[in-house]
Length: 156
Image 1 (cartoon, rainbow, N blue to C red):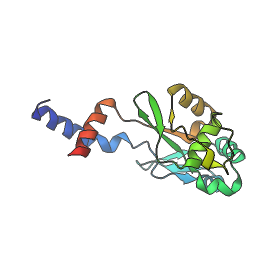
Image 2 (cartoon, rainbow, N blue to C red):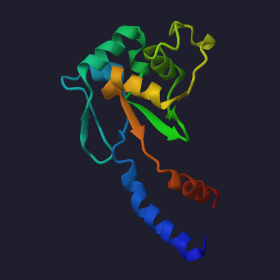
Image 3 (cartoon, helix red, strand yellow):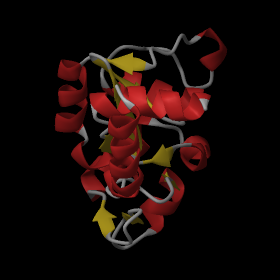
Image 4 (cartoon, one colour):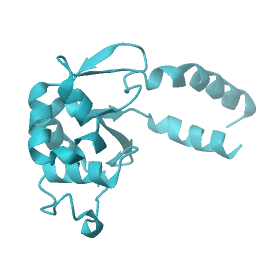
């Protein structure tokens, strides 16, 4: 690309980057905190609220021992990377929860040192997860054309 094209792309991305992730949560909230809310919700980066279904939280709370509820932050954020989705900013326990929901592990949450997290999921697996717990999953959208640009920006 020539310099003018590169400058134009920089200007477009500089203006678009703040809007691309506005649907993502400002912060992820512990399960224990969400269970205490009358209307479980989290704030998005654009200031709007997104509701988490009580049924999804109850399903999650039955799967995880009460003493670990404070260590599981929701919603889960997935980032598309080529042909798979990767979990963004999760602990090994949170990774275990996803694998447990999908039936990929029978390991106890108290024996995580023997657990091997997947960390990536195929589109059909993410669809299955969204069908089972729709309000607990958020997908980060990063256009392919932006990935190369962002990588170059980080190198500069």
